[in-house]
Image 1 (cartoon, rainbow, N blue to C red):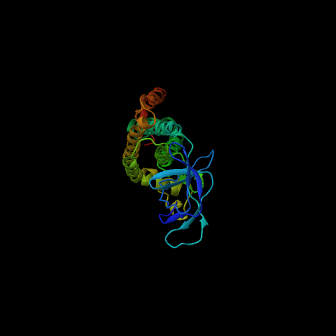
Image 2: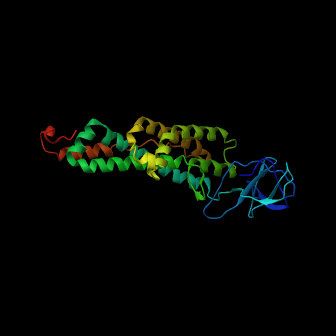
Image 3: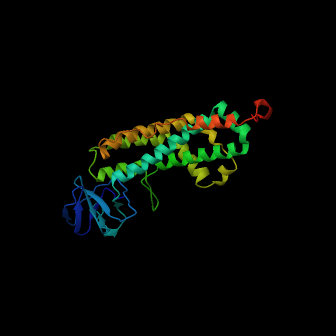
Length: 278
């Protein structure tokens, strides 16, 4: 990230964004802080901003401090994503829809009294394993969707990255309201992200032996985060792709969990209380 007091130490050939017009920024140009980072797995470009205009260059610029007049140093600037917003949008749509389906199945099969009774009687061990796996997958998906645009040197596909790509593509004008909306989603998802970081990505020693269960984060919280994600996506999608405004968090065919319970219950023997594991 460029500090606000940085200036160019030498002339820099670059391209103006979003039109790509050739530009030459002279030495001494004051650089503003950018809003990235923006990164692509296909090719790397460095992005900087001067006088409210964004530019990209193919080589890392040499910068010096305008405040101290210190010698020129080479620093890491923000990097431009060449992935188009529509590519990111399509991927996020699938992620949100997948999480929505998983949450609905959890609600229908693994949380209701009917579901717990049927699945415990039919296959108690299978019920326990698949319930935990489905919860973990849902947590991972919601955490990924609310991740930063980058994680160290790795590239993320997240809503933050989508908004960044929209900014560089000149879509949506002032994106501050969407960034604020995303900040609200990330705040709501903090417990989920913490659980992912402490228990799924790796086991912190102190946390591992505490064995905090997933149930500490209620389905109400999960559903709230998913709904917020869907609404934000619904607001962003028509800007990226006119005519596309559906909320992927709304499951259009919600009967799979119920159908599964119908099949399981049909195969159970009579006198359910005899084998009930509740």
